[in-house]
Image (cartoon, rainbow, N blue to C red):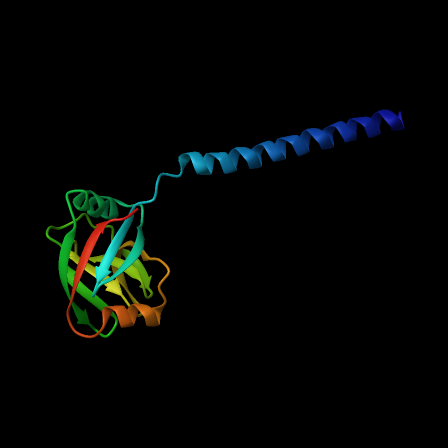
Length: 156
């Protein structure tokens, strides 16, 4: 009887182990299958090109769609010692949410203003995405002081 109970527990253990590994495998596969291709853009300022990944929201998708017609040039100015801001050629849908920004965050403000943060702030914004691989000090150096001309384009 003890052998039978041990055998049953052993079979249950193997069955549960197989189920657990099947679930884990299924989840990891479904993440890679359902994960859409990331929307990537380039941002060129003063001869330096940076890569950014856009968020998955209607605002970012509208920006990406706009860029599919060609690059966009934006004249940007400093604002508040924390950001560069300039107007897009047209308004985009808003997805405002309480947001804490950090250096490299791309924000849509009031539907039309494209903002690159080089410092922190908190407000109701629409997060668009994030510049990759650039530190706060590098970003501040690239952005410089005063006005800059920024070119947005579809990335790879």
